[in-house]
Structure formats: C-alpha cells, structure tokens
Image (cartoon, rainbow, N blue to C red; front, side, top):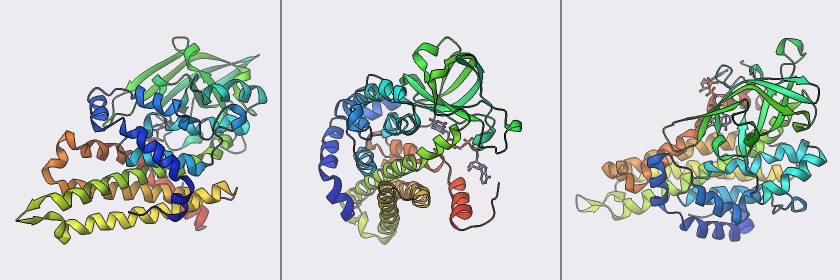
Length: 389
Ligand SMILES: Cc1cc2nc3c(=O)[nH]c(=O)nc-3n(C[C@H](O)[C@H](O)[C@H](O)COP(=O)(O)OP(=O)(O)OC[C@H]3O[C@@H](n4cnc5c(N)ncnc54)[C@H](O)[C@@H]3O)c2cc1C
C-alpha cells in the first residue's frame, strides 16, 4: 500500500518514530485496558515525553511548532498501528483556541506547561444533554459578578475530563433571547478543573461501548476568575468554530489510520486462511469488500491531504475538512466491516483486536460532529442549498 506522495515525502521520519513508539503498546496492552475501561496513562506519557502532543504548539512556547500535516501523520500512525489516539488527541488541538484568541498572559502561563505535559488540557465542554448538536441553544450560563463568573449548568460527553487539569468551556454569558444572532453571547473559559473539583464541579463518567473516558459534568455555582475568559465576552462560539477544521482533519487522519489497520489485517488473513483447500482471499466475495474499502479510504486520504495543504496555506478548508472527516469515517467503517467478514468467527475473538477496533472506529461517524450535520454543511455552504435547520 502506497502513501500519498506528499505525505510520504513530508513526514516519513515522524511516521517511522511514532510507529516505533506504538510497537511498545501492542494489542494486549489495549485489550487489558478495554476490559476495565482503564486510561492508557503509559501510552499518553510516552507520546507526551516524545513531544508529539505538543506538535502544534509554537517553539516560542516550548512546542515543536510543526504544521497540521505533521500532527495528522502522528495520529494516523497511532491508529494504523492499532493504538488509540482518543485518549489524548485533544491535547494537540484544544490549545489552539488559547493560541489564537488568548491574552499574552494566558499564552505565557498555559502554553509552555501544556507543551511539556505539566498541564493537561484535553477536556472540551461544548455538548449538553438538551441542546445536542444545536450548540447555540446550550444552557450552561456564566454570570459575571465583579472579577469572577459564576457558572451553572451541565455538559455531557466531556471526554477525558477525569484525566485533564484544564477544560475549555463554552457557556452562555448573554441569554439567547437578548442577542441579535444566536451565535452571539457565548463565551469561552479556561477552567482549572483541579481547583473546581468538589467546589461546584462534579464529574460523572459514562460507560460507553468502547474504552473512551467520557463524562457528564455538572456546574453548581462554580467560580471562574474573570481572567480565565478567553478573548472577548460573547465571541466564544466564533473562537470554537475557528478550531473545528483542524479538529476534523485530525479526526479524519485517525480514521484513515484505522482503515489502513483493518485493511492490512484483512489482506494478511485472506492470504493465509485456507478453506476448501484454497486461500479465502482467492474468492472475489472476500476480495471485493476489502478492495472497495481500500478505494474508499484512499480517496478520502486524498481529500484529507488537500484539506491539510489548504489549511497550511491559510486558505478556506471547511469543505475539504468536513468531507474528509465524513468520507474517512465511513471508509474506516467499510474496512472494519470487510475485516469482520474476512475473519469470520475469529473476528469476534478479543485476541484479534478486530472487535475492539470495530467498536472504537464507529464513533467518528457521530463525534465530534455527526454525518448528517456534515451533509447539511456541504448542502448549504458548498452547494448553496437552503438551510435545513
Ligand atoms: C464518545 C463520545 C465522546 C464525545 N466527546 C465530546 C467532547 O469531548 N466534548 C463535547 O463537547 N462533545 C463530545 N461528544 C458529543 C458529540 O459531539 C455529539 O454526540 C455529537 O455532536 C452529536 O450530538 P448529540 O449526541 O447530542 O446528537 P443529537 O444532536 O441529539 O442528534 C441525534 C441525531 O440526529 C441527527 N440530527 C440532529 N439534528 C439534525 C438535523 N437538523 N438534520 C439532520 N440530522 C439531524 C444527528 O446528526 C444525530 O445523528 C462526544 C460524544 C461521544 C459519543
């Protein structure tokens, strides 16, 4: 299987080094954690120490100052080698909101510590149980009282909350009824979760079908110093939107990694498994789903690389980022389906890791944004069709 030319030339060394790191965390490591829904502390530590989670932080703040395509190469490789970046991928990109919109003091205080791993910023509190995808209808409210805000409300699906020191929180600061546009009146805050826990902040983990530390969060008169507001009050939704293309491109790269993992596994097994005195891979019924999924993810990969190139050139990339995420997640699922079918009954045995990866890769058709909402974006913003919601 070839790499796209641009990717192979650009980040071959990074891919090689990340692959070596991943070899230290084989399927057995992930299987044991999966059983107890444990957090991959050692894996995250290894990525942190190698500087990979600080790839996007500029050198002046202690990071590697690498382009987005390098971060994509890191996450793709993590997934292609059977590991799972979901435990820590957000440490790479949530800090982008502080980098782009934070004050000099916030940047100086937080970014170097995020870069060296002293502070983990990997919790991102946006989704709420009642508003769901309709983000601007969220109800968590931050009321200004002098030099502080008092926060009340609830979030759901706040991933890694138990393994993060800081959280980036999106809350209303002006009621929806009092703003001209529903995207106004939302603000972004840096929450020191260590200080807030037990002081107005409660975290409740949700057990999910895969090992993905995700939680419900409750705010009950939680105090946030006004200096923790990022940028201007009321402009938080814009700030969050600014980071979404990077997030989508990085998630797409993880799905491409998953697709590669499933395909390599399918091909190897289809070659070696002999039934009716011939390798099962000789049957077109086995070949075609693997080949079709391969064609699907290679196409998604091209779109991903176009999105990354546009992002790095400072061009609009919403179309490419959204479509790459949609197609890569679907292609990973197609490759996963083919892998299950190719392995027959053995696909269901935990020791093959297929059922685990199958559960893990399904998420990306729903989060961080679901397929329907991407299709709505393409319909409205790319094709000029009327807004549907
Ligand atoms: C494991 C996991 C981790 C997550 N991590 C985080 C996190 O760290 N931080 C965070 O803030 N969120 C997180 N999320 C939330 C995730 O982003 C949302 O689940 C996702 O955006 C969908 O929102 P929802 O679940 O509320 O679905 P809903 O908004 O209730 O939608 C349900 C279904 O209806 C569809 N739908 C809704 N409206 C329309 C429409 N107008 N047109 C067509 N279809 C529509 C949706 O596409 C979806 O398929 C996570 C979710 C999961 C499951």
